[in-house]
Length: 203
Image (cartoon, rainbow, N blue to C red):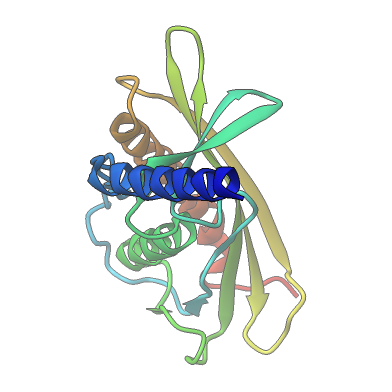
């Protein structure tokens, strides 16, 4: 019985000591990153259609703030100390709206689905990650966009965009920069593709 009591006491002391060590060991700092897309010069509005941009969504595992990195086509992981300031879906939604507002393609661009508009733009992020190679890193971004009429649910227009950009350095900040340039390329092409639809919708 005394031997059992000594074992219990030793276990309790070890637990308290371990807890104390975990409390005193400094945790690595959390670093936060954000996309920063260069916007084109504001253009005079020529479009006659109004546009609502629905908040984009993201497929797993990209629907979170922890940054995703991939070491092979079959294996990926999540950083603990490197995170997005807000989710990729929130940031891409924000920059999509700001970019399309500057193009002048649409008479108005609304950021909320509470507004009534002629057409509605939706989208989903299929890929937003760091690709690790032996000597280089790349940033990969894939987004699907679609358009519906304001009073309908079925899309009448759909495009899928994918871009891969080299990172200037092998660190997460360089990945955020490369993803920003990739998103700029996608939004530039999106604007070009939407241009014919900004004045006349297909029957």
